[in-house]
Length: 275
Length: 254
Image 1 (cartoon, rainbow over the protein chains, first blue to last red):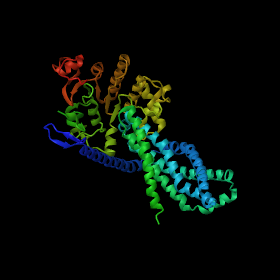
Image 2: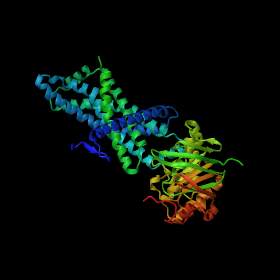
Image 3: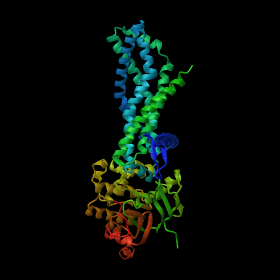
Image 4: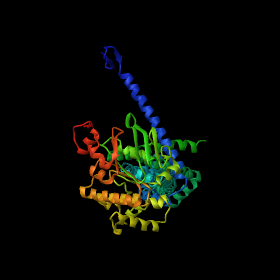
């Protein structure tokens, strides 16, 4: 008897394993589409109900401080070390083709177009999406979200709207700061370890970087902000089953947020830089 | 005969293949207090959440003051919620807000009252449930279980709703604190003249709070009558439940 053959109760042999395998794939695809549908409906409700008036300005301000201001140290440090490492890599690679003098311009381009928004997006996902999912997840399992509804307050307007708006507002600001710090990191490494002249490094950077390089990164940042807050809110809002459910929601928020940021980065890059 | 203030007719609610409510029929008159008793998983909380609009039944009708609740959305739902107060099992206080802001939440967010006015009312309501003004500015995390229940009660009565729901008000409390909470509920409800629905499996609480008692089992009301007649119900389900006997028609899922 082959490994994949099974026997029914009336003794008729049938191939079980391939059917089970296909059923598993089918079930996975169905559940994936169902999840995409649920996230889309949640995003629609978040935009329609959450971002339209009445606005909760106190909540919005609180979230701007939590998401934006409190993320500055982690985003700044990440950008600084990324800029420094990028300068080293480009220098090492560039010496093979006598192109060492491109370090400053490629660092600036790499940071503003790609690494600034992506690294900041991933770091903020780890910090903020996890925090939002844990907070809303705890509110869900302790019935605080139900309590909001019974107190004539729409949870989408009170909880989801301010978080999404705050993330969309603060991410471009964070990425703008990350761009400056990242380029500064490359400058520090370039001038202190690689022997570049201060003035020449700065001139090469400012001559080469165009406004479109920076704005494309800021547009990406706003989209990433939406994704980060949406994933945190969605998984937190739908968490169930006590502490374990909250932990699962937090993990799912970070994993799905990170993957969506990388996918959106590719889509936006091909959209913004298509000839 | 006038229609009861709150009436549920043939309410069905399922979660996937699990049929939790299988045609609930019950009503409560204006200014009366109905207590719904039943074991864990019998459908008590789901019934309450259906009335509150937090869950949507597949079939049936729920009317409050003659108005259908099922299907309400947006401002109509908010307006209906403005008539309700709810005390949750775990109090469901907002951790990020101080005690007085919790109590005043419905006044500030729902009724757009100025915070200074709402704070004065919140402190009055805290006094009504036996808590001092010195607790107003602390975080709910610093309160004991009994205090949290009292703050939850103060939050529910602060907007002076016409209907109040209580979800297991004495669960997790010692018998003395449970009695204190029961007395506070009776006093507060009398003062407001509110219609109330309480769900509990605590018979001492049910007898103290309820004018009427309904028993739910496997998603259906199996008995309903005045609280003082429950000992003479001649209903096997009720007798087993109120005497806490293992033997009887109620199947215990182990």
